[in-house]
Amino acid sequence: MTGVVAKVILSALVAGILSIDRNAFGQFQLSRPIVSALIMGVILGCPVEGAIVGLIYEVLFLGSLPVGSFIPYHPLFPSLVSVLLIGMYNGPRPPMELIGLAVLFGAPTAFLDRAVNVQWRRSNERAFHRAMVYLRLGRTDLVQLQHVLSALRAGLYHGGSFLLTGAVLVPSFNTLLKSSGNFPERFAIVAMLPFFMGLAGLASDRTARKGWKGFTLGLALGACVGIWRALP
Amino acid sequence: MNFTFHDRLNLFIRSLSIQGSWNFPRMQGLGFFYSLLPWLGKVSGDGFKEACHRHLGYFNTNPYMSPYVLGVVSRLEEEGKGEESVKARNSLMGPLGAMGDGYYWVTLLPVTVLLSVSLSFFWMAAAPVLFLLLYNTVHLRNRWTYLNRGYQNAHSPLEGATELNGKVLPRNMERMATPILGFTLGMGAFGTQTPGTALLIFSVAFVVFRRQWRTPAIFALLVILGTLLGFLGPNMRIPWSG
Image (tube, rainbow over all chains, first blue to last red; front, side, top):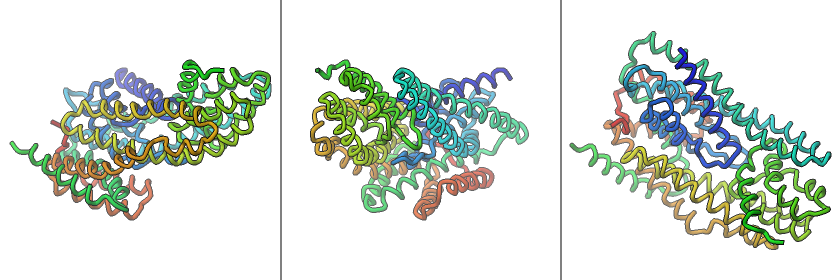
């Protein structure tokens, strides 16, 4: 029990730190699932599964981009939640169908992630007004402090809400696993569903005007290499 | 007065947090002010308070492109052209935002991700490393260059901004995107060892996306279809499972 709580708290800490990279400092893309899920996987002792979850979500959310002032659905929460759920598995190595089930549980948390992000941005409105007041008083040091605190608050908001999410989802997931016994192996297909949906979204966007030739050529090449690799 | 290496580094590091206090009415306004503040303290002299009031307001552009505006404003403030710096800042936000979104979000990010995902089929551990290396090398190098270019082009900032990302690299990256996308699909589909099912899922999803379903509807489809396929669908291998 203590181990489970420790894992959830640790995950919330990671979520908070990575959300600062995504929102407030640098945009080094450490918060993209291809990186964040792997980090979480390494921390929770399931690096391979973490990397797989990261690749799946990366492709699914690649079309959701912060163009203009649009706040997109970000894969940070879904990827971390999924890896956290996989990390709760008690055994030598989690079965692959568990990835599918964890993805199914984790994907909808993208909505929560976005809602938290909007709340954080709203809270920054108050920080801006305070900064204006401090500037009128000639206290530029306090103006700077408002900015730094806002950046840190991004971590607090996301980390805190991740903690609550984990506190709800982890027991539900564990109860489901215990009550249902082993899930059918077919659940592995669920893991690949978002991957192909993501590719379809990108293809629909990219080939809308041009690019069919390049796409088909790439597909044929990928198929050839795939078949060659599958040969015994 | 010299725009020393230390000044540039200070502006550069502070500009990394330009989105740190993003809010709906003023967007990156406080972040922009935070980045510029040490330089204003150095060059404004008695007019420091007015300079501060000039630059704590509305600002929004692509975060990666913001050092260019900071470079322009730094030079104009240094020359005592305060009002001109505000005009330059306001006129640059929109064009640089559009340019940066097109370059970083629509081109660089998808291309680097797709390249990394393609690589993951051969060497999974290298995929995140390649992604971080490619993406961060480009944007960090560019941010530094933008800052210097902005300072140099302060008197004709819009003309200087048009060639910031060049033409050849973005165009070639744009062209690369669809073949890599196709390659990733081919590798992914055949890696599952049930390519027919994989391509069927892809085709159904393609039709859904073409009809421009809203994101919540797509997620609902994902969960419903996922649950159905999990219990009733065929078995499928995960390509990276070894």
